[in-house]
Amino acid sequence: MKKMICILLCVILACSALSVTAFADGVSEYTVYVTIADGSGQIVVPDEPISIEDNGMPIYAALKNIHDRFYPGGAKEGFEATLSEQYGLSLEKLWGVKNGGSYGYYVNNKPAYSLDDILFNGDHLYAWIYRDTVKWTDTYCYFENNEHINEAVAGRAFTGRLCAIEFDENWMPVSVPVEGAMITDNGEDTGVITDENGCFTVTPDAKVHIYSARSDTMTITTPRMYVNASFPTVSVTISDDKGQLQAIWERITLYDTDEDGKFTISDALFIAHDRLYEGGAAAGYEVKHTEQYGTSLEKLWGVKNGGAFGYYVNDLPAYSLDDELNNGDTVYAWIYQDAKTWSDQYVYFDRPYTEIPLGEVYEVKLMTVTFDENWQPVAVPFEDAVITIDGEETSSVTDADGIGAISFTTPGEHTVSAISYSAVITPPVMVVNVAPILGDADRDGVVTVIDATTIQKYKASLIDEERIDLSVSDVDGDGVVSVMDATRIQKYKAKICELDGTPIVQ
Ligand SMILES: [Ca+2]
Ligand SMILES: [Ca+2]
Ligand SMILES: [Ca+2]
Image (tube, rainbow, N blue to C red):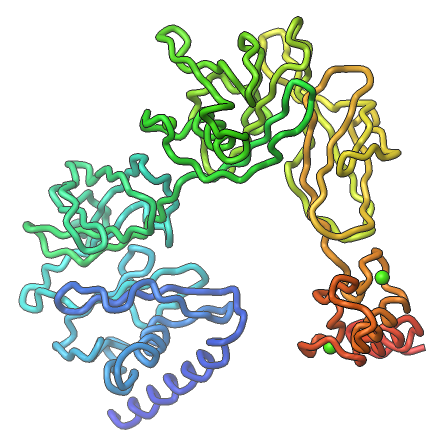
């Protein structure tokens, strides 16, 4: 009987090994994550991803996969599972340790019942060797906010919660807070201890932190949580008193310029001036602090006009320069062109950036902000504005829905804005990245036989590199620009094949 079981198991494992290797290098979008902790609480395999098929992967196959990849000598040396009629499949050896079955394995912070349990996309398996192999007091412990990677803002408080799984009188798992545990950061004690609710607060600096915890009173499994703390990155546009754009969605990684402990609009504007204004922030930017109003703007882009400035965040009015910014925010600051009656209207495109293919007609939407009877901002379409591209007026005028149309004849980055002849507006701005077309060697926006000739001339050294777009000239994708690419374009124009070489059946 035992021999039969052994053979059966070998077959199971062999099958699983096949399915694993078939997907290991593939582009499967189904992934499970495996963590293994050894008998001293050390995490020897941290959150290792495995690509799986959409019908899942049994726990034993995932463990075998991990041992094959990371244990010296592979699963043959480090992993063993046996099948018994009474208990089904059970762990005999984990990470090279045979200890009479003192192992645990949890999936998504809940106890798994069998090695045959199936892992599905996004599941996290945590398997460990018991530290206490006598009384089995090891308690499974985890961070409640355990995402694969938690995003956080550097220098700002990040709150976590440490929990453990205990079992009630009916042997059902219940989550309980872990009090009095020391939080560690990249293996070092932080001095932060979890409170009676298991909660703790850390202030990560700008890097990836691996938080864990240890307890002097309980035998806990080693929890693990990644926190990627980074400074917020925002985009800043500044327009001056002539309605000219002086900064166009400038990407800025914030730091605390005024050391008030926050990343605010003022920090973003300070950094933008420091980078773009002649003489830096010292010359072009000034704020005033008062108890009544907090921080207020005195000088923007070198202009002092008694405070006729505006600033919006994410196309909504901001209340104070002290407003905190988050990753991805857009800040638009302007000097009123009409500094007397402040009639400037804030006008914006529905997005700050877009990407479109060369030659394609793309609809843009222009909006403005009005205020209702409760002084709440309301976005409405902005009509009758002339769309400009790189400062040149186009024939497109926004309709009653704020819609206009643009298209481009040259690849690269373009600035789209708008002019109103009926109102004073802040110049809206959208940065458009126009993707080049494969085969358009002369960059005129279309693939023609002239592109084939361009490649031939280049290969014959009749034109130099400035007259050809080499990035789109390797049409057949063999890694070099050659006369073969010119031939491919000619065949394409003669409707013999597609640009990718697929024959066209007439
Ligand atoms: Ca600050
Ligand atoms: Ca062309
Ligand atoms: Ca080629």
